Image 1 (tube, helix red, strand yellow):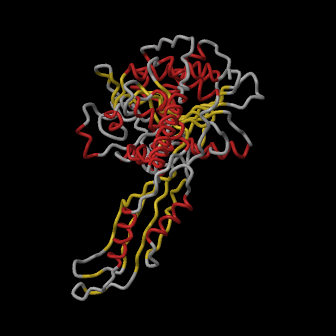
Image 2: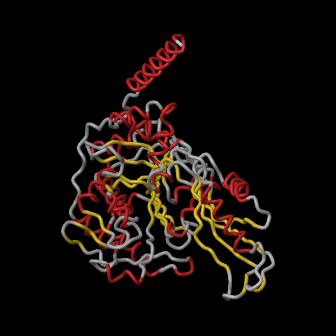
Image 3: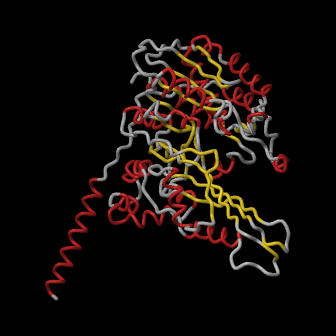
Length: 485
């Protein structure tokens, strides 16, 4: 008994020492701010965003593209940013996708590319009267710019052009060629925009040193325990696929129901999906988040993050407490559409459902389908993928001078902020460039709160002038400093 007690005491002491050592060794790797001052932003920048919002560049379906609105926006960009248009060569893909090339002095260097998209999602008619300002008015009131696209994603388009125009006026001469790409149909997959540009680059064998697209944001009070802004820089995005689940077996009269019906079999399949979620995993983006945010977190968070070998179950439990947290640590499966039956006294012979999956980096469409087949385990259920599908994007490195420089710029504009790699839960146009670049960052340099997140694709979308101007400062300083790398 004494021996057992001694072994237990020694074991506890070893664990405590190991916890303490890992905790003390878990040092901050936050980038330092640059020894530079952010530029002053012209008051006209807000008016330019206001005007851009007024063009109803809605993408709903390819055949419903509003060419008149896009023509107007493209013309507006040409006249509003004359100095940039003098130094950059413009190419048009499809009908309105714009690719600018600002030639560098050293053509032996791989180019960098900045991206945004000009299209916006539609306004639901039922909600139009709930807007404080008409959704395409671009009204400016109380320091805010209102309208569809203020956050997603005309702030990026206008922000990049404001920064580029400032640099062109200053006669900035890039050493490394700069591409700027504005897609016309990101909201419906980018098939007529960014995807065509990526195909052209692949045909020409053009590789890029870095790509910076829209995506994750600077979160204010979005990261638990972090009171200041955290720049969440997306280094990967989840994959996307929907599966049709179909059960087709004999039906009959409801007065003489079969033991098993198409509905009951399909229902069991959907219950199996709900009861058997994918296991939790720490993917590369979340590992990067832990490395960057863990050392500057409150004591208990830092203790857990520095000792994942012991506290990983608690870390998973913490993430799993919310839907957004769970999405970061597992491939999700959600039944979104169910169809069956035509009459109340007829047992249908066919029942269908659609299950949407968002795939975690490190997994793919094949492993997702195999998992579904395994947990459903019913030969009467046919599982077929829908056409719209995408594997998770590659996870870009966050251990390089480009990521560090981007972080340093954010710290310069937001001195109290922190920087971290992150996982993009949605989809961006930059996914089409996988294979052409191993440093693709998905990041909109604008501050968001929880309330702001609800405005994306929602009602009363708006951005503050201060927030917008600081985003321009980030773009300007990034272009200038990254080009010197």
